[in-house]
Image 1 (tube, helix red, strand yellow):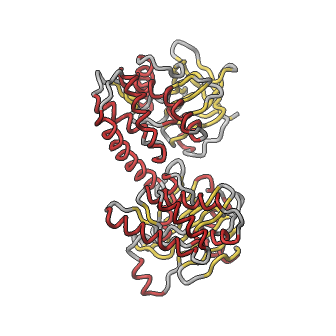
Image 2: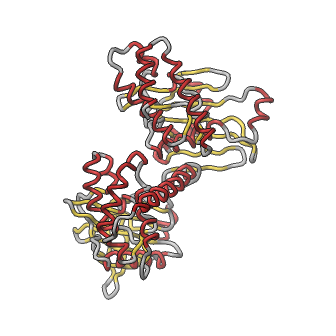
Image 3: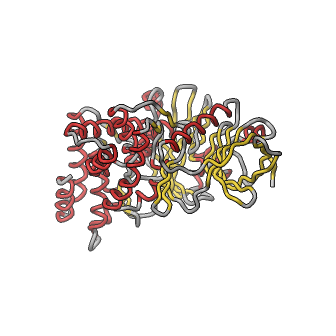
Length: 473
């Protein structure tokens, strides 16, 4: 097993290969070693969260490296102690040590075997079970607030569930105040609820009641409206940040910016064979299976070590067209952003892999969008199906979900819906827009609905079924 130190970990960046050993020094003890078994989260050059083992005992460790290691370790410890002082259950803080070489600090916590986080439990729960989960979690949040403790980066992953016990974790973004006002408490509750999809907002009145009971607050008629407004504000900010992350180097994406190219790729696909495709996408299109050849776009399916991919090249149609595109975001850029907009909204669409833009400094030329291949007929196949109701409902769910979010597609052809075993998937997102002005939003929704219903003029029963479903949204 490799022996590493802080210097080696900083140099490795994201390429940290486990398992490895660290030489550590605890206060009042001699030097010892701890084995890092699995890296769970990694912030290059700054922090590693990992499953570790020492003397046959498992720990959850947080390893801080770099110039600010001691400051961040101290902040984590203060946050954990604040959670404990609020009489909220949290994994036991076992010990603290220094790395023997290269600087750095390591904190060890009780490892909660077999625990799952709240978001994983939430995704498989029905409405009743979601309320039951929150009846356990929200009182813990209320207890923190009662003690003046705030998790500034609160999210469902901060709550672990093991055998009906709730553990609150992550002291790194915890602050403690003498007292929280009702407005500050409500804002932190709203930040927590904003982490869930808007389709669960129907639960907010019940969840507020759970919180009010836990705090001993009398019910107030205006508080619900205030909470909903705060949830909406936090969710808009989260959506903006979610989309922005898709254009920069971070845990999920690798990004290469140069004078002649901009490339962003999902890290899970950042492999040698995929890099070859990214370096010469035209060659990959030429050797792939052509799915569409048009003036505006060329689409090809290719193989990769992670399964079939689809490359869509947005073509430049002469110098006049080039001049109109030079100073604007490419359609591939817009499609890439809209993919993550729909992902945030929980609406089924293509799984993104990479975005490529040819550039001359700030000027943009041809662009490419690469996604995972989705097998399935397009929605025109519904006309010949005997019992298409499940697919019809799935498509209506997508359109209604976009409408509720103030998003218009701009080209709701039946061929822009693919029918898969997991439900319908919407594609071709380069004309999609999110609207803030109500009059523009309503006009766009009407155009989308009319365009969609025209697909079914030859199948009156389908047309009526879709019309009924879309009207009831």
